[in-house]
Image (tube, rainbow, N blue to C red; front, side):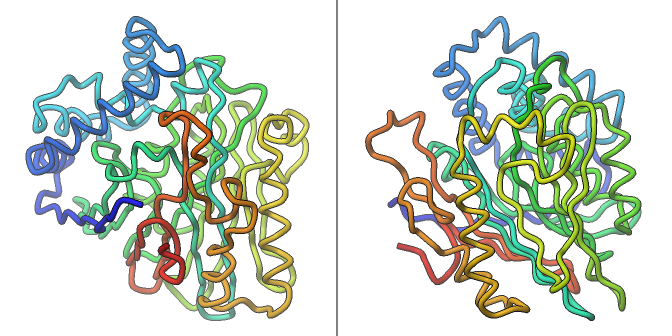
Length: 354
């Protein structure tokens, strides 16, 4: 396995365009490499350059309409890295482009949250294609309103999982629904970014998610641990509807890659295409039920489970697959909501780095 070091970039700019340009200049080679890797991924799935240009233009239009400030930051990243704005829109809309093209993607990500009376433990494994193993970093910045944000994301992508100084955290799991890809909506990564950069409560987070016209399905787990009251909810998003999953009576909240709410689960494609999601979900819950409430250590242990090989909770590449189709756990994330910090470990939890 290739060695990796978590890279961190601390922005000094607070205005969106300037912040994007600063990042683009500082990491021009990394952003360019991420763009090329996504072009490689799209090409291997039969997405033509002509289709890609059209999808990227549609995505940029959707972003501009829903969040002009994020659109300005995307423009800044592109100009700072000396790339076309369409290239940066493309990688921010990678989930939506894959859905629009009808591409079957890798099963990815397992999320665990444990609620206590006065704090929250929130962790996940981020699984994605192996070609992107060096294309992520931790971005730290402060908004014009003074909110501090830390997000683990890909170079050139405005946000993914992370938390802010108001105690709001976001974790991510991809979903697949029959209604995906019929149009081009606001990219889920842009939605997550707006939550991280603007929301100071769970209710505000949910309002941002609900206000976006979506075209690809995702679970965004929103957690709050910045005050005496704590809470968490998995928001299952599909193009036409939303579902909400809350912690059980013992404060445990688990999500993998299938819909848990009705009626959305009736259109779930994951049961047909990647049924390992239900096995990971069951394995995590069975492991944690032995010692509830879960601790940071027992959650980390559950996310270290390699049972099942390439389909495990902590997964490794399948050498029988072509290079562009191999995927694995690229990183493990642990949110410190009380302090607005995200700790990221390459290739899985710290206890399972092999």
